[in-house]
Image (spheres, rainbow, N blue to C red):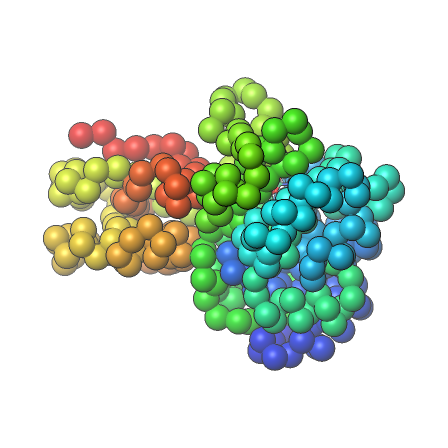
Length: 336
Ligand code: TXA
Ligand code: MG
């Protein structure tokens, strides 16, 4: 199959592919998603096959707006959920709620009694869902285990020949996946940190648990996806938490067999020796989050064996970045 690159205005073409039971990658404000008709289990199964994703890992149902959610979700969650939707949709918040029995297939929910809903903040994709007229499932459009795609060419690299088309809307703005909040438990619980922070949520609802901190080895995490190897480039990633340690870390890693890449903000890169490959994370946590996955992919293409990546404080907007970088590094931090 030849994978077609569609312009962000070619909504009808993309919708036609979906209606024909084919897979179309779509842009969002976070990362590119791998879209399919959420109401057809046969097609949803193709999403898992294309990504090489374990089938017990449920998918996010992308909707055009709250109305579409209540065709599937349990209405008893409406008051709480609508507060969040009003404050954060369209935007990077995925809301997990119990669903009406039989309304979504096992292929979407992984056999759970809940499902994840999100209205992305991207006009082309909202137009696509509206034109298609049904929700679309969409995991990130990468090969399972690899960094999520923030450019159409990342999707093409991982999935060309396996999907019908990619709706190209340029680079994604946020670069890390949505915050996932579970409303189906006593206290609303964050299962995956994203750019909507605990503080943002506490402005709208009274209480929030951030469970993702507490998942220890051997424990079963609540979001099935969190247990798998994630975001890992082929190179070995080592996190440098203190900017002052870069000089020492670089000189140590340069003595190893295999080339080195450094990913950091410009302020750090200006002192890196010119023969070391670098990837700029811009100037702050927002540019770093936006460019993290692209950087991991680029340094992989450059063929480096080690990546020294800058750590940021694991709080507020740094939580999502830290969570993803920790996974890509298998929790390896540089020790001075
Ligand atoms: O920003 C995003 O969320 C992107 C864009 C494309 O929308 N999507 C994305 O999807 O990151 P994915 O499939 O890579 O991550 C969805 C996460 C997984 O960790 C999955 O296990 C969890 O949400 N999840 C989905 N449904 C769930 C449910 N019913 N209960 C618990 N966790 C769920
Ligand atoms: Mg993913």
